[in-house]
Image 1 (cartoon, rainbow, N blue to C red):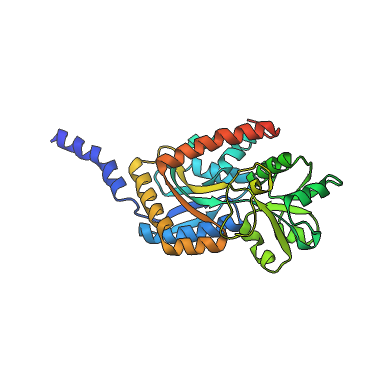
Image 2: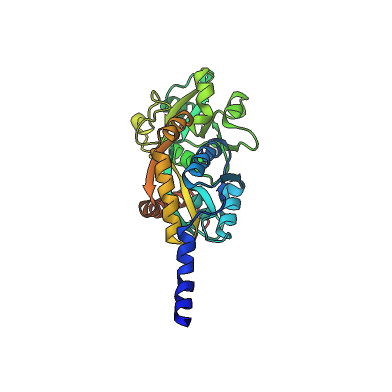
Amino acid sequence: MLRIGAALIALLPLTAHAQYPQKAVEMTVLFGGSSATIAQVLADALSKELGVPVAAVSRTGAGGAVGYSFVRSSPPNGYTIVWNSNSISTVFHSGNIDFDYRAFEPVARIGMEVPALAVRTDSGWTALEDFAAAARSRRMRVGISGRGSFVHLVSAALFETMGIDVVYVPYGQGTAPAELLGRRVDAALQWPSQFKAQVDAKQLRVLAVTSPARIPVLPDVPTAKEQGFDVDLVMWRGLAAPRGTPKEVVARLEAAARRVVASPRFKELSAKLGFEPAFLPASEFGVLVARDDAAIASLMTELGLKKR
């Protein structure tokens, strides 16, 4: 009798995991803007796949440190996950948190966003070399979402490759288009979806994207590489859970994410937002995160931004 009881107790955790999820799942969102918009689209789709509500909860601040710290301290049971990105590496190496990507279990890469450099149409600049030439005669003010952020890192890498020095201006509570149109900055590097309406209205012009190939949402915009500047930096976005989350739970989340990314509806909405669905399973996603962390650490060291 005692042996039977012990065997049943040993099976309880497995049974509980097999029944996951039994209640709402909370997905921490680290940033506003297009990241938050895509997160809501993803949360709605995951809700249908998992059969329980998935709530996208905003926990912004300190380049992602606020949200990452919350999720890391949450129980590793699959009910608290994070909409993560390369920011786990930038926020760690900039010294804002004392733990790195290894504090989380990779679940799946969902897709990618490509940074884009925009200027006012009336600037007259139509290519990166135009901007570089102007920047050699006066220091340009470039808007960024925060010092040490991924877009700051991409900006620094791009301008170093171009051989120019700029002044970085944090957006504060503003958005990239507003800062540009208000003439508080000369250029801004952000996600394409933030610029699309003003580009269509011919108020802003995107000079380049930093991906290895052109992107569907801005098919006529050349890459930095096409213009002779060797920069290849994109933001991946995915899902992660606190370290120690059971494998069965991670597998359930991964399977749901795979179906969402493959769905025509998610692809359609992503295209409108300038987001590129690009699923990777947990194992491959984990390799990508580790590889990118090493690359980001090296780049931040070169640029004098690494503090940890």
